[in-house]
Length: 149
Length: 419
Image 1 (cartoon, each protein chain N blue to C red):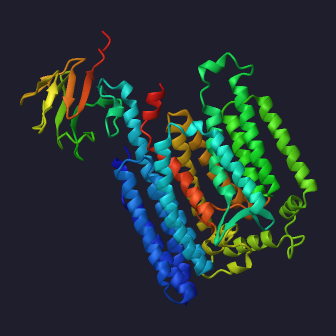
Image 2 (cartoon, one colour; image 1 turned 90 degrees about the horizontal axis):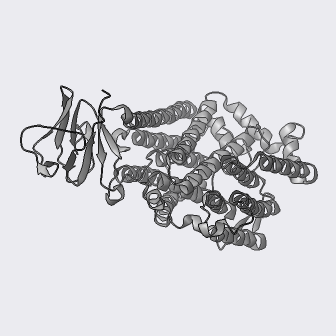
Image 3 (tube, each protein chain N blue to C red; image 1 turned 30 degrees about the vertical axis):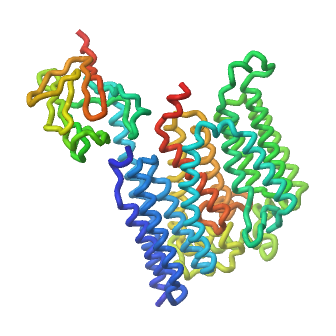
């Protein structure tokens, strides 16, 4: 009697190890995919370049973040661009593309969004290459390499 | 970076694994061993806390500790099944090992800027430990490898492994100061080779004196692969190859210890009741287990000599089958893969070398012992990381993985400053 129990439990035991390995490999796979997405930024039309010195920040940031057609930036889970700065709001600001140019708008953030030192009001503002965007403790340069003429 | 995909699934599996393990042990002994249950619970708790700390504090790779904790759980369960006292001690070592893991991680992070300058210190400690073993050491199974202080016994070669990797990494990556560049008669890369060879020679020499063949092989292979990775010339690699083959052949012909190992590897059944007893019992056990195993607690593992330390893998194969053995191998595979991944992703040259060396040693050690007990290569006694019974092996392997963790969590501050 004990023998059958032991056998079945051993099978379960081994199956759990395999499930664990599967879970780990899946997590590693998702990680690698997320990293690859970040790295392919060189082809993006526009990106945000961090100008803070990364060693001054007590959290980890990338050098640059590529911008898609519509990005919500903030601390929250549902943002398309999540940044771990405490001084950001959950949904802080939005950068989106319309008619070939990029616009930035504040999403009612607590500490505000600054474009070249001026705080944004309710309306969206067009971004030009080289604009300085400050949110929370982070400073970015908006870079949009000109498409070849 | 890792938080996006973090999930609690692996933790649930770890808890289930320990639960099923505890049930199996209880069936086997026909009763509940309260101390073992409490310790198993403690391991689950510690795993959860460690995982939470690593992923919330962004200390880097979140997988290393998870994999270790599964290996440790399997080890603990197998040890308890073999002998409850072993299991309980093993589980306690696991908990102390976790402390070592985080202590090594913190130390490595704190001392990161100085670590590559401490080669003389590593060398000094290694030699001191070797000499101490030589003078006061205790012999077990033909190898002089234990230092006994009171009721505590300790295997110095396990600790020396880590110092060895730290010093080789430093030798191969340390920048040559500008002021010496012109004054030196030899090229910097030649000096590196000579220093590395000297360190290896001394270490391997002591290990041979103490008849620790498994660890000798480990050290030499690590040295050889460092040479290969850091671009020594082909001639130098060949020279080392010849030297190793020469020493190996000499050993195989003249040293009775090695001769017996090779004989029993080639013809295990020629003298199955005496010289070949270990390896044949191991093979019988693996064969008896078959594909699916006989069930934990149902095998006749006591026929295997040294079943709790070197031959634990044979017991796992007998009771959990080839399928279970493969699961353990895959765990090691993922662990070593993470180690190399960390080495590849790392930007600091010294840390890269350390990560490479530690992962390599971990992988090779697993290969040497599993290859040994399955008669793929001649058998040499070495522990199976995290599963074999033994405090010094457990603690130092934990420390090695803690260093990997520290390297993976490094946010490039050090490279910024060097540039």
